Length: 531
Image (cartoon, rainbow, N blue to C red; front, side, top):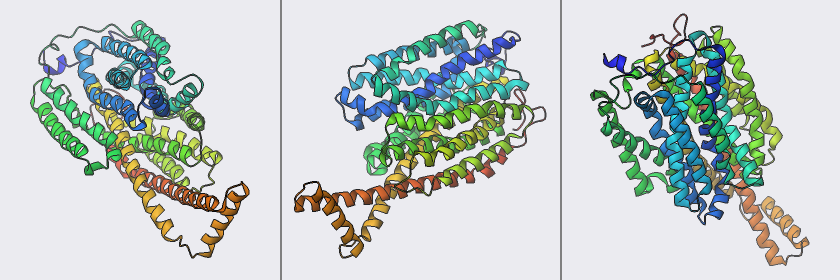
């Protein structure tokens, strides 16, 4: 048997009935939803976790980082694991592991216990997203790919908005442990549905030999250190920290030797040769930028809403919900358009224009900006994301042959995940620096002899005196209030800079979308074109 034939993934033994295909789609999407929601649901509970587990908020950041690190390590390995152990067995194993790890998170009585459980959750969850997408590509015929991926896209785009909404409600009304316990019934349902609907794994000879332990080691070092570098860099002043510098050097070392190993070994853990397809490498570049725009913007908006607008986590989640609903409503529409041969590159261009314009519409922020000012930009942004996500998925993965789709899907999902991490790290750093810049700039113009400054201080001093404060205390309170006003204005200006920066990045992505090349005639799965 040839090496190519030995690498074929387990596929359905024959045609799958229409109801069976959509039952499979529902089952694997449910598993993917668990993974995506848990990427963001924890963010709203960190303060409560810190109090409950007697830890600092800084220490609890590892609850988020540990999951992300484990997740990115397993994503590119998901294709190899699926081939080695069987696609159905590996997906069910991932669901069982994720569900058990969720229970362990909920029952954790200390921060180390919770972090270990989150690592297990990330390792199990990493296999759910990539395998779910590859299973869909293998289950549906080419003419139904767009609608199948539209269904899957509803999960991927709505998940980051559902997480904070659901998490905010559970933390506010029940307790932080329930953001993990809520996974148990959903996980059990997904396990049962997957066991019931997925075809039995075909036994393929030749997959038990040659485990690439060295490649897996280099992968773990490279991606693990890179993700930790991105997650912790801003918090530790980047290269001012010896720890962060060591992480950067280790990531570079690991990734260089990982690439060398995978291109020279007979049985690679991650088959990088799939990058010979132009659709994949070009789509992956665009996917990184999309990850920055999607997750970076979702990172910035909640911070602005809480720090400047004073909203609670639950209120922020509800504010983001219409955007997710708009995306969900637009997915079937985009799936229909793509099935009617809409050029994915045109869809991507339209999506870039919509997303960039809505982000630019948020630039004129003021300290008086309210929830209503976000409604229409976020709603339109949700619809615009569909024009980017679904056409990009179809343009990048649609032309890949079936025998390579599992490897291609794992790599493609990794690029979006890494794009999100890069976006959060980059925007966190820019936000911190711009706040310091604007604060210094505003404070420079607030001289004590300025009549406007004197007048404002007098007003504030009289205000606090009217509340019963002594003159000295009232004057001190007035200075504090003025300083707070300066910081608030600096923050607003900094967030405006961020929205402008992301908008420009999205507009600059338009030329990149056209290097994807024209889709092959008849498009869809199984076309090996676009080398």
